[in-house]
Every structure is written in structure tokens, then in C-alpha cells.
Length: 117
Image (cartoon, rainbow, N blue to C red; front, top):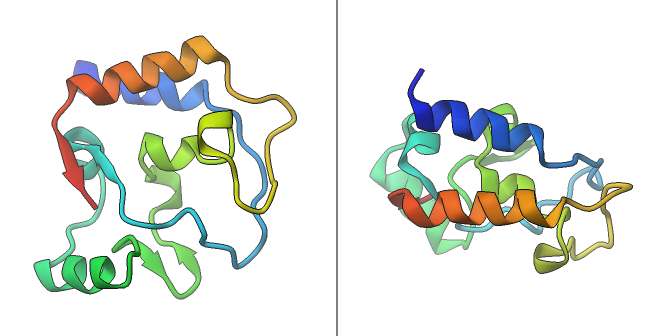
């Protein structure tokens, strides 16, 4: 396990969770993720990426929701947990993410190579 893998795991633990509306995928558009996070995901073809992007979706969004929910990138985990990325349906955890943890996530994302999903 690389130092960045350990950092990703530690940051994930600091993001509060909440239950989304079943069937909602309003936050599942194209996003960028660190190359380390993308390496944890199954490989998608260029055609799959192009098809998803043409519909402003993520290539890992299947007909039953996120196909990689357990390994979803940090940015996906932040949606709905911070005032900067509010859930469009008003869902949220009991306590929003600590501002220091959110800052550390953004610093990690800024210093790592980003890949468009």
C-alpha cells in the first residue's frame, strides 16, 4: 500500500456518511479523481467514458446506481457533506464534515494528478 493509498483511506474515514434518496443520481456527473483513486476502480473503455460524458454522467453509474460505491472517489464522498457541495435534494449527515478534514481533502486533490471520470 502506497502512502497516498493510506492517505485516501484515512481521509475517507473522516467524511461523514448519510443515506441518499433511493434512485437519485443528481451528483453522479463527470468528476475528476486522483490517479491513485482511479487505479482502484475497474477499467472502463474509451467508448464507455465517451458515452457517459456525452450524457454528463460518470462511467461507473449503472442502471442501479454507483457500480463502485465502496471505492468511489473522495469528491463523490464529499457531495452532501459540506456547504460547498450541497445535496440538491437537501439530504445531509447529522454533522457536516469538519472544515479541517475538508481542507485536507482539497489539498490532497490539488497535489495529485487528476483524471476525468
